[in-house]
Image 1 (cartoon, rainbow, N blue to C red):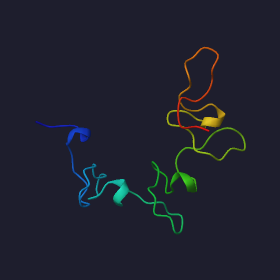
Image 2 (cartoon, helix red, strand yellow):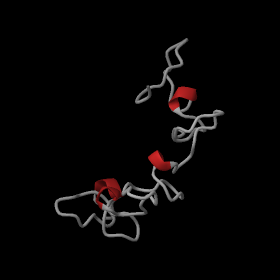
Image 3 (tube, helix red, strand yellow):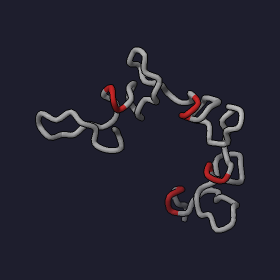
Length: 101
């Protein structure tokens, strides 16, 4: 029976002892060199989305707050500091749910 990637379906990373899914068109997962790499000189991190750079070097979606150069949180147009990401549901609290400082 076919399975989703999380349950063993699809192509697996060929790096020894790795069980992660291989990135489309490559033999490895992103941790082991699969997918596009950041084009910033000396960087070997994964490029984000359709950009040519990792988050640290300007890849992915940027925060829309004027003067901010941080990465926007998934599904939003802002970084954590400027209201992006999931928020606490407790009445009167607007803090980020996790991982923001």
